[in-house]
Image 1: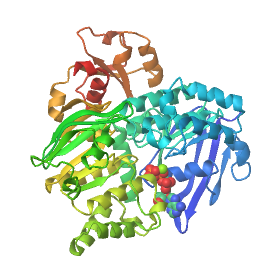
Image 2: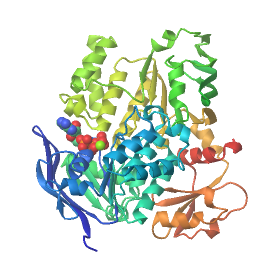
Image 3: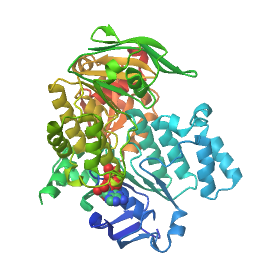
Image 4: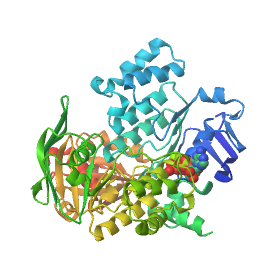
Length: 245
Length: 299
Ligand SMILES: Nc1ncnc2c1ncn2[C@@H]1O[C@H](COP(=O)(O)OP(=O)(O)OP(=O)(O)O)[C@@H](O)[C@H]1O
Ligand SMILES: [Mg+2]
């Protein structure tokens, strides 16, 4: 394997005015793993993802993706990364099929290829729904369409920011089976979630709070080390430990 | 007391709300649980007159409201799924603005504002522009603005989507307090964990109520036996291989590090599932939801 650590994050920092949203965090993401990224609201998860994917300027520190520097080689990096944002960045006034055409276009896919994808999604979702405006379809389907568009350029590395927020228990599980399929296909996945049962589906988790990493490791090892039975307890302890320090 | 009688609403050929009848007791917490697109939001909007119903009646304290929805809206606080904040105003300015339009008495306002921001952990961010808040922080601010007016009835459409686990607990503590103060609360949510706090749980699918009851009755009358299985190795691999068995495939699902197996009939296949540990457990609301969700005919 060429890069065991497919992403290296070093002393990464984001300041908004005098406020540190992300404060000198360092971590690596291993090729082919599912990394669960957890933390309270405002912890800095989205900000971190946006810096790694080149959507937000880095205040200080460095990020290397497959050895490429995000600050300098973001164009090349974008060619093999996919990002599904917290509020699914689909165009609400366009239909699903139109969104696929649009995002296929910006990814530089040929027309024939885009047509193929439009055909492909009709196997998953009824055409009638695909022809409705995004703003009129249920979030669970929106989420499927968003993931689909994010996977069209066939990225190696996938960032999913709260893909299961607002999704019901059944669809949440179906979604995780899809994430597992991506892993089996060799993809590297970073996923944020507020559903702590899902944290146990990750190979490793990182918990951040106030822009700092407060725990990281394999879910089962973390639980064992702190002698805890549930992720809820671990999360709570990590957050309160950090706040009282 | 709020009563819904035979409410219906169709869009084209889709029955968004299909003959829903429901009594909502005063000073209670009713939780509407269901998949996306199940009809929860449409139902809530019908109650508020924001969506015109095709059929059915709504009663408030035994009297039909007819087409006068102001009878309800004048005493109700509503947080829609897609709420709006003033992104250019700070957190505090948003609170003040909503206090003004909701005519919150001055002497109550400061105290209430302080308490709500403190409870939601938003106090340190009082001066921050709402547009610069994280997703979950926006959600918390939106809820706080609704609670300012202390309405009699509070309707919250998926208020905790995107809200972190610790804040979610706080949220429901606030709701409990409001209930104790005499409020009637209706909350829709896809998170069944927090639905455990409800007095009455209503499962909705395809616009219909598929099951309803108190937590206790739902748990006591759960018609299947439930096993919690700790698999060997990777959870996804394990469930994939278990699902290859036709007789088990529909009755297993993942939950954290465990696989859950619902045994409905008399025949059990538990012996066929390779496991490190098997334990018979009592169902959570999520298990109960998943049961009725797939066994609609068993209702
Ligand atoms: N443009 C901005 N200006 C000022 N502060 C900002 C801006 N964008 C984000 N922040 C702040 O940075 C912090 C981190 O926000 P971020 O969106 O990364 O949190 P998060 O961990 O993704 O939270 P959530 O779970 O709610 O999505 C928050 O305090 C947020 O208010
Ligand atoms: Mg976020």
